[in-house]
Image 1 (spheres, one colour):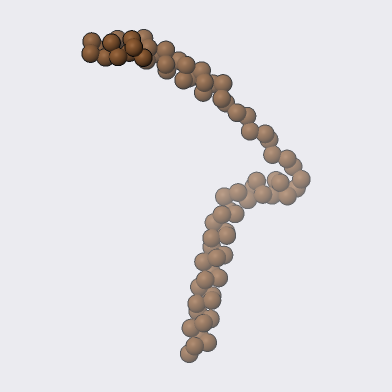
Image 2 (tube, rainbow, N blue to C red; image 1 turned 90 degrees about the vertical axis):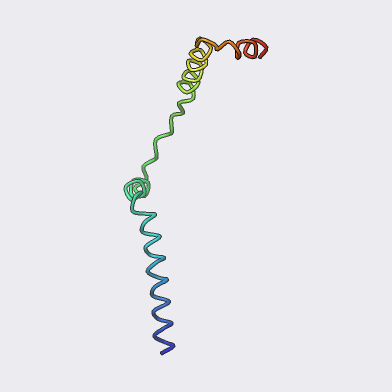
Length: 78
């Protein structure tokens, strides 16, 4: 009886481990195969310049918005 219980526990944990490994590999299988064939990945292009421009535009829009009367003195001191 103990042997059967040990086998069930071991096989269950093995099945969970295989499932976790498979679920992490399956979404990336094309990338893994591509790298295994010796192909290099394309470098990631950083888009910091457009993001910086977007922030600058947002700040300009915020600064151009009409200011409520109680907030105007606070914005002027800032």
